[in-house]
Structures are given as structure tokens and as C-alpha cells.
Amino acid sequence: MTTTHAGAAPTRSPAGKLRQLGIDTQYVLLGFPIALVTLVLGLTGFAVGVSTAVIWIGLPLLAGTLMMSRGFAMAERARISPVLGRRIPQPIYRNSRGKGAFRRLVGPFTDGQYWLDLLHGVFRLVPNVLGFCFVLTWWAGTLSGLTWWLWGWTIPQGPNDQDLPGLLGLGSTYLNRSLFYLAMGVFFAGTLFWVVRWSALLEAKFAQGLLIGAYELRRQVTDAEEARDLARQQKAAAVSAEAVALRKLERDIHDGPQQRLVRLAMDLGRAEQKFADDPEHARALVAEALTQTRETLDELRALSRGIAPPILVDRGLQAALTALAGRCTVPVDLDAPPLERLDPGVESTAYFVVAEALTNVAKHSHANEVQVSVQRIATGLIVTVSDDGVGGASLAKGHGLAGLDDRVRAAGGVLAVDSREGEGTRLTAALPL
Image (cartoon, rainbow, N blue to C red; front, side, top):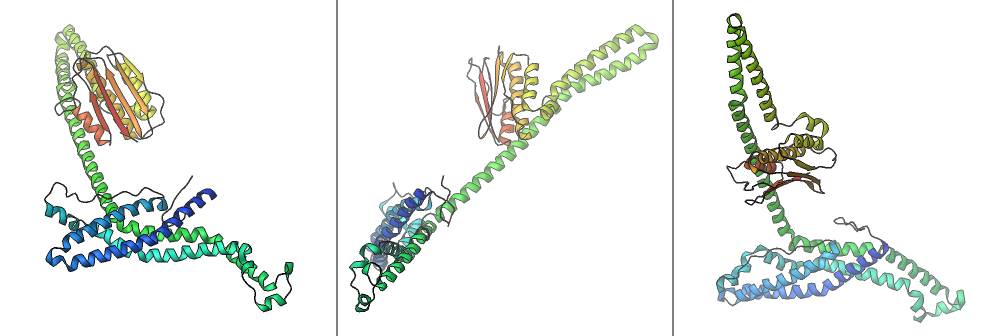
């Protein structure tokens, strides 16, 4: 496995280091003649183009120089990818196609990336010469030092060397020279990878800064703006979902339990008045009040399903969905394997998705069966509710699922509905973890 850190050598196996050494060496050595070509062509084209721009001849020449710089820059981005160990994106240049000839001609002048490409082509020789000298010196020192014993004997010896007997009949000066070259070769070989690596990174980082630095900065700004817009949308969706839930709860309480409690109070008051004169009638009123109490409790339990139940908090999502499926008037096939405890917001949203979906199935779908599935994937939670009813559900405003869509988006998720007329409904919520 390879891990690369900016500005440092990657952690590699010996074979990986040898491969990277070859990549870095060819990058630096081949970059030297390319840098000479881009320097000459860039400076010549720019100087001639600017000096003749007053008579309009220089504009096409200057535009051609910028286009040439773009071509060299695209090739350089491909060359630095294996050096940096990551894919280098090609920036998006301003498109002048389909416009007039003059606008196509001056189009490169208005795109800052063209000028950065030209700047790199002119000044890339500065870091390349430095790296080229180091790489050439270290390779020469390594090869000459480690192979001295193969070719050093071919160098003629001086008269003093032949007068001094030494090992194997050779002069002692030759032996000392051999040891010196061997030590030099070991030193250069031991530091070769690091010197070549840093030389290649010096040139590659210079190219990265000019050729993709501005593009990556713009992309980071764009990503930050998109994240900000998404956060605003989630906040608006959360506010909308909360407002809809509060209005619905208020309306349901006003239309249901509140009216029953008013009638209950009136019945109990009438019963109190009748106890002395008409006990039988009073007992009937009390019995009716008890019936009203039970119905009010049933309605309050139904309304409390819109609030996270204690079983969800205490025992988790699987137990809460099991209880929810057991109360549904339509048979439910529940597929919810045991899950570790998730973020409370995710569990609550998943519960409300299933609760609202089962409520809609019971009220509107005329379905014979409903299937509920909860799956944990690497990036989140997938909740699916499907039935064999009449279909026709929609996420559009004014429909029953619009508030549920707001709740899911507020949690950072996505809600999708497939509900063709007569073919049932399939509701899928993807919630991030």
C-alpha cells in the first residue's frame, strides 16, 4: 500500500521506490529540454506579438503563443500526475466556439489560465535547472563510484604510483582511489532516491501552483458555496417541516381531543346536576363520559405517533418499527434487521418516514399488504415502504408527503416516490449517517 504526503517521499516497498525513482528521474531529465523549448517559444512569441500588436499582426501571433502554452501546460499536467501520486485535473478554459472570429481570437486574452500557462512555460526553467543539476550529479556519482573497479584500471597511473608496491601488484594510490570512489558511490547511492525525489517535487510543485492552483481554488470556493446553499436548504426544510407538523398537531387537537374534552366536561356537569333528581340519567351520562374519555385517549395515542415514542428512545429503531407495524390496520411485512444505535436524528427521521407512510397506506391506498424494509449501507440508511394499493402519491406541495419530504431533506437525505396509478406506491428514503 502506498501513502503519499505533500512535500515528502511516499512510503513504498523497495520495488515501489525503484519505480518512483525512475519516474522522477525521467520527469526531471526530460523536463530540461522541454523547458528550453517553452522558454524560447514563449518569450519569442510574446515579445514579437506585443511589439507588433499595434499593427494588428501581433494579435494572432500572441493568441497562438497562448494556445501553444496551453498545449504544453496540458502535457505538463499529465507528466506531474505520477510524480505527485494523484490525478491532476485539467482546468476548464473559457469556451469561444460559436462566437465571431474576433471574439475567438481575443478569447484567450480574457482567460487568466492562459496567462498562467505562459508564465509557467517561461519560468519553469528556473526550478528545472536546479533539479537537473542535482539529479545528473547524483546519478553520475552513484554510477561512477560503484563501477570504478570495472574501469578505473584503464586510467594511466603516474610514475610515483608504479614505484609503490601494493595489493595484487597495483600501486597503493590506486587502492586509495578505489576506496574513495567506492565510498563516494555508496554515499550517492544511499541518498539518490531522496535527492531525486525532492528535485522532482520542486519542479512538480512549481507546475502545480501555476497550472492548477487557481482552478483548484475556484473549485474549493464553488464547493463551499454549494455546501452553504445545501445547509440553507436543509435549514429551510427543517423549519418548514416543523411548522407543518405543529399546524397539523394543532388542527388535530382542536378538531378531535379538544372537542371531546369540552363535551366530556358538559356531560359531567349535567350528570352532577342529575344525581339528586334522576340518578339513572346521571349514571347514563357518566357512562357516556367514560366512553368519551376512552375515545379521547385513543385519539391522543394516535396523535402521539407524530412524536418520537419512548420505545424508539429506549430500545432503538427495530423495536419501534415492530410496534408501529403491529398497530397498522394493513398487514405489514417488516424487514428490519438488528442495527447498532444510530444518531438520534437519523432514527427519528426513519421512524417518521415509516409512520407517515403507513398512515397514508391505511387512509388512502386501499392496499392489501405493505412491505417495509430498512437497510444499512456504507454511507447511510435506506428505508423503503411499498404497497399494492391504488397509487397516485406525490411529493408535490399540497400532497400528504410534502411535509415528509421536508423532514427528510432537513436530515440531509433524499426522498423518492414511485406511485403510478393502479400500480401501488414505493417510497424510498436515503438518510446519511
